[in-house]
Length: 567
Image (cartoon, rainbow, N blue to C red; front, side):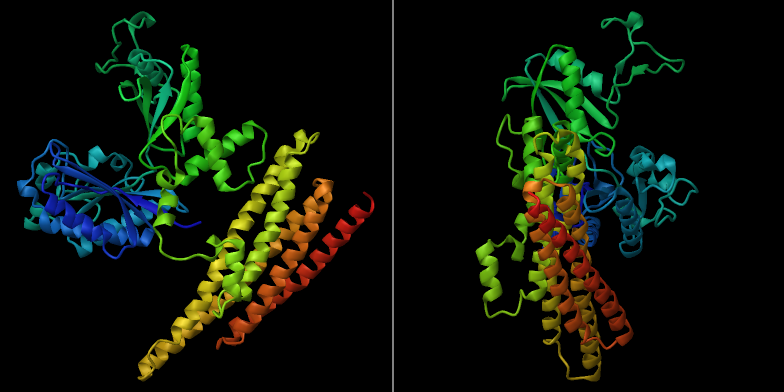
């Protein structure tokens, strides 16, 4: 899975378009991140920028944006309605795919350290990146705002985590930045079959974490009750990590429960939908659909689709596009307007934005024609990986057919688990199709390196060894991954739908071809390695997998022929 994170820096300038454009231009420089949104506010004098990309690229882009903001924004002259303490006021990193919140926290701490050392901007770390529990709260880090920095800088327990020092002219100009990590915030509206804002609010209060005030006598019109300190006593709602209100939308002519899910690891989108639906039904109201505001990570829809498939006792080992379709229909994401995943799912937007041509995106005929062309890549390594993907696909197909077989309803979960594993292996092998070609291209790139001086020759030799090692390790990964498909295929031959046993057999043949084809690539590429100790270790491991693959294939084919003979 490709690693993608989101960054949402807030800059203390919302009125001067030239300054805002200069900052966003720095962020976009190099084309390695994608700018998703720029939202300036005149009253707040603040601009919220959203961009995504791979972790290293996002961190570098954030640093560029912070540098430019420090050059162009003088905090001594800044005034606005929003709390702030720096030219770059906050800079959170958010996991989107292939990255955990903990990894984002480490990236945020590294970003804060570099900003203090390279840009001389003092930084607090907040939310998941906080070093102290109380600093998880942004308000604690920003206490006193910009005007209070002079009293906090250089004071133990008060100053920033990185770059703390007595208040000086540089701090007076740039202020401090809060760098953090948080989970993705999902903004979602649940459509109701009512026009009543009051009833929509009642549902929102039922479910939101904050809940509603406790009232005297338990009556809706009773006075809010207070605790000993005079604070309103709240009755918590049923959904943690959510904020919600009810409102009426003129455009649609309906009321909605508008919700922010601040931690989808605590409350996933589908759980929020189901709970709002339950709370609405208890008040005689139906949730008729869902509106996603802005973008959403792919995993939120995949988790939702799998949830509803489980409720239907259906296998979830199906293509992501089909899982997302189930999520869309189950939650009514397309009720108010068409829901196009390519425009709403962050990962798909990034894929559509890429310029790199992928082999796996070609048609079957196109892939065959590309292989048959004069170009040496794709070659046997990519074909082997694709054979492995087909082996996994066949095992997955038998599992899905078995999960859906009449009379086997009590075994759907058993086959769904097998299908999910098969889908995972298929995805890994599909990725290896292009990675094998990339490995070959790396070797070709070395031959264009200069070799006039001794230093250039040494650099070229080192690069060639590195590229050759990579070109040997990739087909070895193909061997290992394709080998894992044998367990699925054997299981499906023995326990799956008997009508599909021949498909499991063809899968075994494809899996063996994948392993043995990749083995040839391991051998030919390992022959070019200067490090013979490493080469022999790789060859020994590959030879063992090759021998075991022959045994596995023979066992499965014998089993398949036996079953066919007795049908």
